[in-house]
Picture: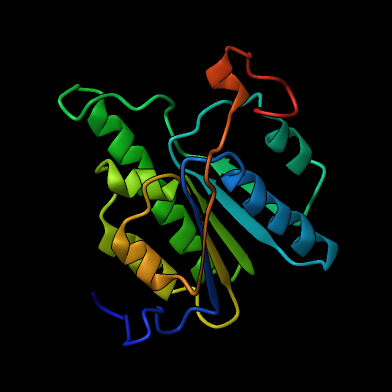
Length: 184
């Protein structure tokens, strides 16, 4: 893998954090970092892969924070690879990576959140090497934050901080419905 050195971190990246696991809170942790950065006047770009719900609370909240830009490039529920619409999801995911690369080239952010990029790689929407290339291009002034279930070994090796959210219990599995402000 290009750009990786012996300690497992990507050469050139300022910081790389990865939030993975089957528990709740991966996106929430990343958005908490965006909120913290906004409090310091720092710019954050959040690219949401897979997600496509325009009615989420995080989208509404980020509209009031000029330091935080959040863009959904996903197409929603991911079909099987054999489904003809899978290619549209792949194209949308690649557009998300291209958006991130443009923002880095234009120095538009100090925090770059690639939300749900881990399952995008694990499910074949993106190539791991392409995500690692984006991380490498962050440079020392940008913190990259990767989220989602199923982080691949290469993505975990590239991060200097890896947090696994572990589900011990989740209300949705007990029959509770998703709640505004909690799940969306």
